Length: 102
Image (cartoon, rainbow, N blue to C red):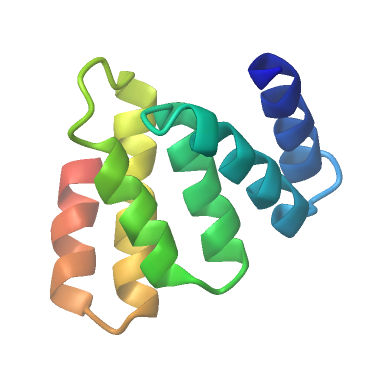
């Protein structure tokens, strides 16, 4: 189930550009596997695209402390955190996250 949902979410995000539908699929995955860091980071993008920077930041912050987080997901999480902080008007935090991202 989970690989199929993840593939569907990936297609909705990167082919259809249907971020709300992708976010719903990723939420279903996370209901069964709350430490699925790839799903957390990708749902963060869906939330950024859906103008929910606080939700995006929450997903990234939930992913970062999980043991075994892949380096590319860690880098992406910091990039999304920087974007979310910028959307929330916190320039200092955006710069700090951006420095970690670099």
